[in-house]
Image 1: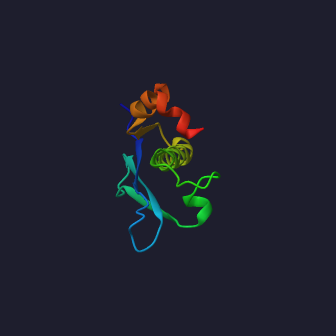
Image 2: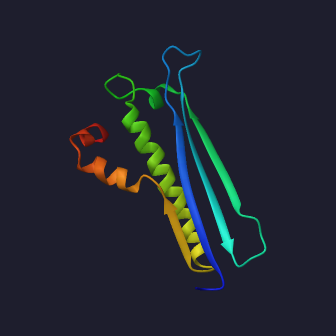
Length: 119
């Protein structure tokens, strides 16, 4: 076991549009944490919320509302991007392990018939 190593993780959440709400929007939040083992520092945390409210965010080119599955795909992409950025920054300093949940779910989804909705 190395004396110094990093463990990083990222996870996301979302609030779907509610057509009965006061305002039409959706939100994606990406959170992350960086543990720097072997250093006397507290873990670094981050939360990056983003609100989508413009028509081009909420509606498809055909005029219908954006499906939840596409919002989920945006969240998953954001999680992966955050983790990749953190891994690139931290791996130069020490051996690094990157953790992400839902990886198997994404793989299973890509094998399903519903994948046509993402294209």
